[in-house]
Image (tube, rainbow, N blue to C red; front, side, top):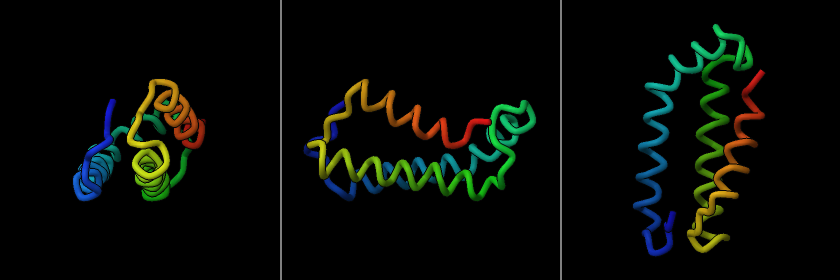
Length: 88
């Protein structure tokens, strides 16, 4: 996936859209994961803040430190790190 050449405002809009999706659709998924004993039994607001904060910082890293290059290895590593933070 190539993000190089995208304006910072475009990437900010992507992050906002993702934040909106997590806030509105993620709560039910987090609740399902807690019910199924897959996700830590922590307040959803804390879990959502962790996820959104990670995504925002990760996107900043991509643009400013990785020339907008999103590799499969970077995607896999970042997902694994975030998943390890919330899984039981």
